[in-house]
Length: 165
Image (cartoon, rainbow, N blue to C red; front, side, top):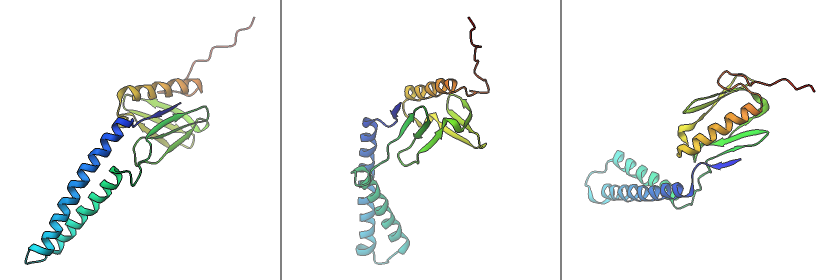
């Protein structure tokens, strides 16, 4: 199962916002820098540095908005061997293998994976933009954990004894 957590419509909206904000910062920083160099009798280094910083930040925003730099995909993926997810466009991929899991704790806003090494990893459901997709991810993990005989929220799965005929 593979779910794209950042749909195309949302990505286009984010890129448009980055373009507009980047253009605003770049033009404003450029104007402030020109003002420092050309029109004011006293040169203020701090103001010039701040203006150059605005141009630099605006330039990065313009580059991301215009696809010069690419965003990573935000996704959730699960198969028989592993769970993989990236919740943000800049984040790193988290991979968890089913054989390394001891238990899961599932709440409305967080899924906590308890590993055999004692380490805990967290999947924040509120980082997923669409609530119905977050519920789908939560329920899918719940059912898969039961299928792998892992305790969920401290409750072990019930395994019926084999029928003898």
